Length: 252
Image 1: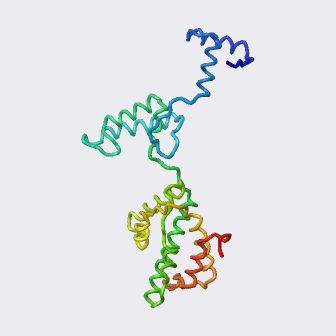
Image 2 (image 1 turned 180 degrees about the vertical axis):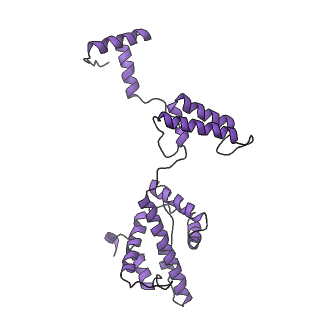
Image 3 (image 1 turned 90 degrees about the horizontal axis):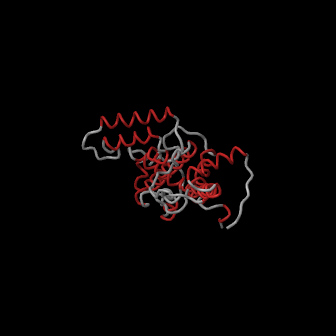
């Protein structure tokens, strides 16, 4: 066993000896146990604690508010309640955890919470949806006017959702689900559903943003019109956006 020599103040040594005596061990054994506890991982719960890390501590004011809310909820829940709020006993148990300060159980207060999707990323999702809506309406108009739109081109310009295995893209996919849940972006529902409910199974964000950038360039090159169909894209413009899917370094 290796030997580790440590210099400490006399007061620290005396306090360590008192602690070791209280435990019935030598100072060396006591310090070794402290070092082992600091270096060797202890028990980690295997439960799913949600995406946000549990708070290591809470202000007393926050604990008081949370405890009060749990106790209020315990009083107003129906006796036969069986949803995520649990029953009165469950809520009172949550209150007791907060009141007793059991920090190892604080994860229950944030279980199911996700990190915030930034305003920038929310905006990117809306830009992507808006682009695909315009693409969809443009294809419909072209076909209605008798212009043939190649199936391969339509496939390239289809909204495929986001990668469910990537943290950011998965969060974006859930945001799209939320936006669509009240009937918005109805013209994209079919594309969303046909692509495994919006799971692209591959990273798509950078591809979409290249397409959005090309769409913006197209809009910037036009004179601003006032007719409701002035935003629709021509076949050539659709092809430009389709080309933008591929990274410039990989284009032939």
